[in-house]
Amino acid sequence: MLILDLKMPNLTGLEVLRWVKEHPECCVIPTIIVTNSREPQDVREAYTLGANAYFVKPSKLEDTQNLFKNLQAFWSMAELPELPAKC
Image (cartoon, rainbow, N blue to C red; front, side, top):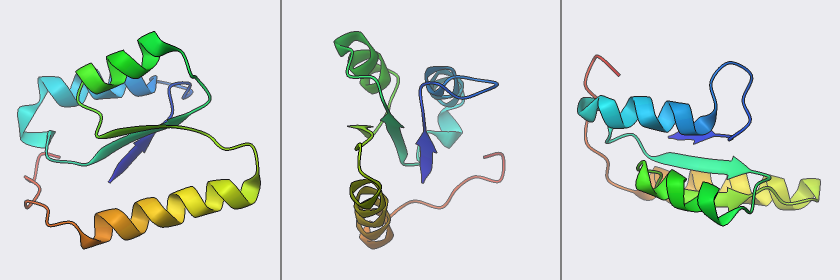
């Protein structure tokens, strides 16, 4: 699972999504955006670029912990294809 924020230091989450989209062998990686932005254009672009889910970061630490726990639980139960060596 790849968890991205839109505001990362070297590449934005959207730039990473673009890279993944340009490398179709890696598009099987579940990709989740967790960010502060509620901007409709950010949500739309993330999904257009192949994000599997988009979450706005909760304000409470406990809610953030629950979000990540639930993400891990969900994706650990999912059947996923084997990742190519290039990814």
